[in-house]
Amino acid sequence: MAKIEEVNTGNIPEHVAIIMDGNGRWAKQKGKLRVFGHKNGVKAVQSTIEGAARVGIKYVTLYAFSTENWNRPKLEVNALMELLVDTIKKEVKTLNKNKIRLKAIGNLDSLPQNAKMKLQEAIQETAHNDHMTLVLALSYSAKWEIVNAVKQIVRDHDSGKLSMNDINETCIEEALSTNGMPHPELMIRTSGEHRISNFLLWQLAYAELYFTPKLWPDFREDDLYEALLSYQRRERRFGKTSEQISDNIS
Ligand code: FPP
Image (cartoon, rainbow, N blue to C red; front, side, top):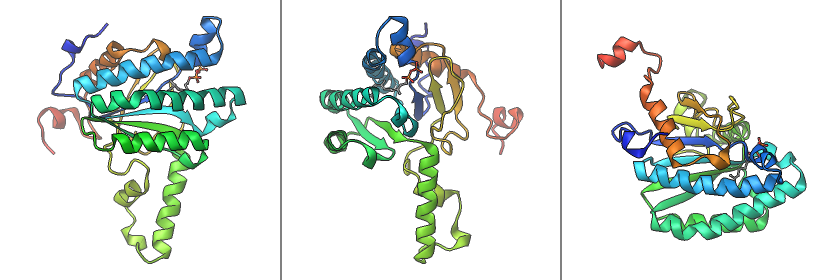
């Protein structure tokens, strides 16, 4: 198992995005209800965030609830929302102690009123922190986000703020909910599934993908370091040749 000392602190991704998967299977293996898996998933969140802050990762985005997750049984959806509110309420103190700012992306208006309110309170109470940003993707899907961005661009075009020739990558970036954040250089998915599942499709264009068979509730700080070591062994070429990268020529 990787340890923090093995990680090269000079080559840390600025933004790590995580698909926390396998809570249900973890609970099933133990003969428990799926919600038990989600509750234990919170321990994995705490350990991972502590580890990320320790090595100097500036942004962590967690896929906590997708647009598609609304189709789960009502009981599970309600339990997840309750868990979210409880966790946020309990963790604000720790976030402030560790100078971690909370943000959220997704269709936040679709969240239950109480969840939305607690989330907004926590976002305000941590807004001054500058060590790390924890982004919760809630009621989020990349296709939803892209549709929203297109609507925004069309509105700006129709109101005369934007001409057709001005539409470029930057204006798309600015219309996404991640505006102002760096793109994730590393995306981690647990539970052995090899999919992106409608997560940050635009932003992950050049991300390194790391898949682990570990189920999310078993994921800990050292597993994050393992993922970072895998990232650090890779050569990120962005379409260039290996020689251009090693000789540092453009
Ligand atoms: C995927 O596992 C996990 C989720 C849909 C929810 C993730 C939520 C948490 C870890 C709890 C709290 C999080 C925060 C940020 C407070 P799954 O249910 O799809 O598992 P399965 O694929 O094994 O069924």
